[in-house]
Amino acid sequence: MQKTVLLINKGKSFMVVTIAKSFTDAGYKVVEVEPTMEDIGVHKEDTNLFVLYLGDYVDDITNTLVYLKDICTEEDKLLIVIGTAAEIETLTQSIPVPLISASFERPFDMKKLVAQADWLLEANDDLAKRKSILLVDDDSTFLKMVKDWLSTKYRVTIVTSGTQALMYIADNTPDLILLDYEMPVTSGPQVLEMIRSESKVDSIP
Image (cartoon, rainbow, N blue to C red; front, top):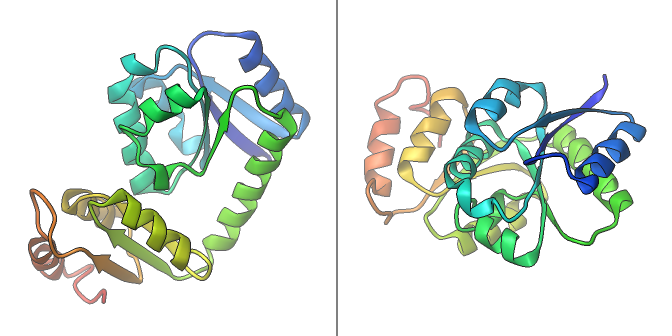
């Protein structure tokens, strides 16, 4: 089956054309979309791999970045980001670092980008066969540390709030949920009570 990448970018710069050509030459189907919720929403089912090419417009797409965060959380999408250090730093204010599969600061090696994409897709296929854990905590640093630790043996999905956890569970059934006790808005015990009230997931440990 042909590999597909969703290339998210604003405009048609020389660098974006080069990225698209590099993926095409490596056997990928490249679907290019603007960084809008509408465009991404239409094509998000085409692939599990998103490549987001950032520019000075990053401050203007906060809603899109939050939408991408939700997709990566709820649908286990792989996200590669490309940009300057400042652009990537701005992005991480909306998308927690643990949700970013890889990042490349410009200038970067095009071959390494494609190789990283190949590795992520292959690893993702392997992960699909593993037991799954949903990790719920509002501390991004803690999430990254625990995800790195558990990912050697398990497929780990992270969310940063009880609300996101409930949204994820509505469409997915993890084998185990690791739930923080104290979180803003919806606490761990409240989330647990709601999980136990749903027959579909009430037996998940």
